[in-house]
Length: 150
Length: 150
Length: 150
Image 1 (cartoon, helix red, strand yellow):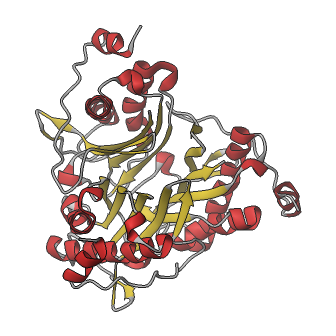
Image 2 (cartoon, chains in turn brown, green, orange):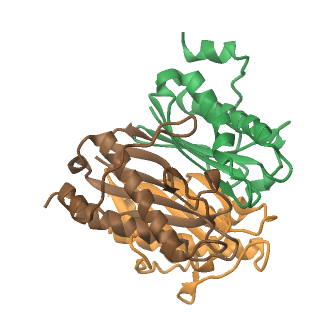
């Protein structure tokens, strides 16, 4: 079963790659390493403004992280034209907009990691760091950057 | 027009590479990927102490980020001996010392990104993440690390 | 003198690689770059809960960072089966759980950097960024991720 079949079975539509809101590009290839910019959580096309430990639960944060993973998928598709070319999801850096007492950024991050493993199978398990940021662009709740190998 | 001409036209002097203030080195090559350490904003040779959203405006933060990009340029020059060897600016991680309600780290980061694109032309557009850190070394306002391809 | 002799002389026992507490893996190879996940500080096998600038001194933080470096060593050993295969410690990202006025994350980070340089000799000096995070997984005091070249 190809990844496109899995994506369809999950009812996911690969989104178009979003244009960056600032002076950078969504991805850069360096040899066979594909570096994806930090992608921020959005809802209805706008930044998903919230802070974990203040006005968003861990469960909601997981959903936000999952939605960022879907946007990263859109960028992976735009970069490779064929997700079958992805050899490995190498690394995620998961930034969680956190009140000073929110200690579950790793649980929030699982929302992205679990989807990627579900989609990419044995090419999906990745190295990862997750942490609580003091703030994120536009006040969004989650930002994720990725390194993938093609 | 070479990058050195552009640097001259902008009135920029490439600084000497700064010695790290701790137990690490300013750059490491891994194959053709050049990893630069986090460089902190300085003014008059000392850490530029400020926090966005508290005692520094976004415009000032952009200038600080631009000054860090110039210091990164000094390290790129020391690492390569010839900026023409830089094939691509691959990735920036931009850390902004932020009060908990400052939501424009991406705008601050543009101060560095815009200069790099101006200097490196089509080798300049890069992947990027920007976020608000709770604090930075010495209380500096901005810290930036870079990956470049040679 | 091999690195194993140095490790023994320092009275360090290489720990077994810890199982991640979430949906990711401790390391991923991408070509000859080895990406290690963020490793969190532990004490007695549990997250070492503390925040710099609130209830932990810089000296204690250095010891915590050193202990994370030892855990990273365990993962390097598991990944390579032979630390002699490590060609270079390329890069550390050191995340320090920080109160908003703690400005010495770089000093905390030295606890890890100094040990790595001691262990790996001329293969040890690395690029590095250190910063204050608003929070970390489980409330741990320090988290460190690494890139190494094999």
